[in-house]
Length: 281
Image 1 (cartoon, helix red, strand yellow):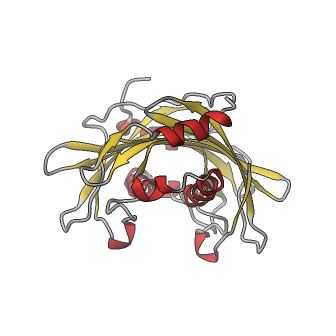
Image 2 (image 1 turned 30 degrees about the vertical axis):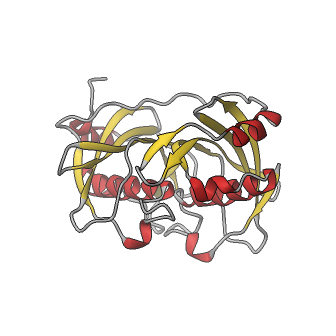
Image 3 (image 1 turned 90 degrees about the vertical axis):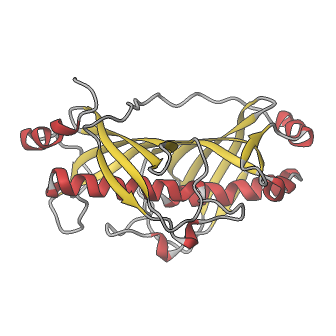
C-alpha cells in the first residue's frame, strides 16, 4: 500500500536535511493512515504499542512541497504482535527501509496485550513477508558508558499519556551528542566542517513506558564496535529512581567527508573512543 506523507520545514536539522529521528514520525503518520485504510483504526484509540523500530537510512531527505511516499506491507504476524515493513521514497529515490513491531496495549494498566481478533484477521489477509534487515550489535551497559541526564518535555507525550516512541530517538540522539562532545569535540555534526557523521542504521527496543515527571531520566551511551569507517553505539534509557530499563537502542554512524563519502576512522578518533568501548575488540 502506498501512502503520501507530507514534510515539514521544522523537520530539518543543522545539516539542512531531515533529522534521522523524524523518519519515525513519517512512519507513524503512514501507519495511522494504513490502519484507517484497513478499517481497524480503532486500534489507535483502544491501544496499540510499539515494541521495536528498525530503520536503515539510504539517502538524505530534503525539504520539498511534494510528500514522501511510504510503501507498507505486513511482514510478520502472531497473536501478540504484528511487524510492518516500510519503504520510504522521495521522488524516485529510496531513502529508507524500516520495520516496526507492534502489540496491543492496555492504556489503563500501561501493559502490552495481544492483538484484537479483528486486527489479526485484517493483517493476515495482506501478510507478505519480506527479507529481514541485517542484525546490528547492542551491548549491555557498564562503567564505560557515558551517562547523560534527560528531562521529559510535556510535548513529548502522546495520546496514551506516555512518551511517544519516536521521541526515544531524540533522547538517544541527545545522549549520543553529549557523549561525542565529551569524547571528542570534532565528532559533533556541524554544517561548516570538512567532515561529518551520518546515520546508516538505527534500532530501538521499547521496554517500559516513560511518563512525564519533574525528575530526569538518564541516557547511557557506549561504543559497541568500531569498524573501518563506522562506529556502532549502544544506548539505554533508564529510570534512575528504580533502576528500570525504559528503552535500548543501537546506532551505526558513518564517518564521512562534507559530500557524504565514507572516510576511514583516524587514529585520533579511535584513541578517543576506546575508553568508552563496552567490550574488548
